[in-house]
Length: 201
Picture 1 (tube, one colour):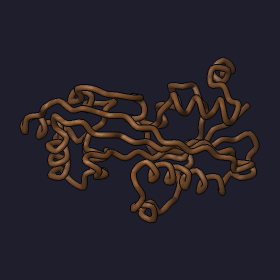
Picture 2 (cartoon, rainbow, N blue to C red):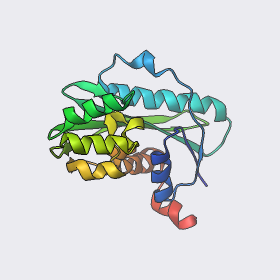
Picture 3 (cartoon, one colour):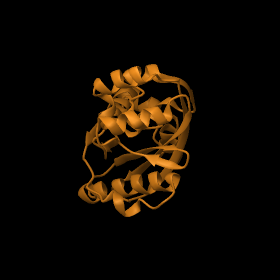
Picture 4 (spheres, rainbow, N blue to C red):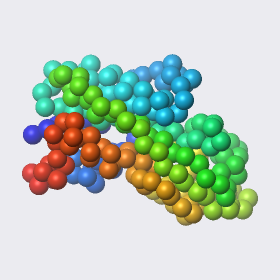
């Protein structure tokens, strides 16, 4: 049976794989993301996901029937990439900037077969529109601590869901792993049917 490695430290991506019934082991990649920082966002997340998968592949290249799944997510507003806020003040400023407006969330993901290094890498875009947020609500949300480790200073799968007015596209893409596209890649490029996988567990 196929074995899977999640090349990510993200608990959100791990939870997504768990919910899909995909058995996995976590091996965190060790990559220099700054080397690719000048790329446009769509290419950036694709290349970073490929870089992460390749890095982990070197550690498990002799493993048979093993597939590495990696991903990278960025938030883009007015052609600027918003990363994780460095402190509470920056988190507040990010949320004020996004209040009442629409931004894009781009996730690049890669599936790589360890023994052959055959790989497919894609990126998916979703649009997220925030409600109009008062300064008081922003302060309260930032004080909860949730925004500080998340790109764009919010977590859509947690408390941050209440400040979102609308999503266009794959919700799971915003969380960090576009499951519909992942399903298609596994099936079409690697002949792995997740429905069959779930049935064997």
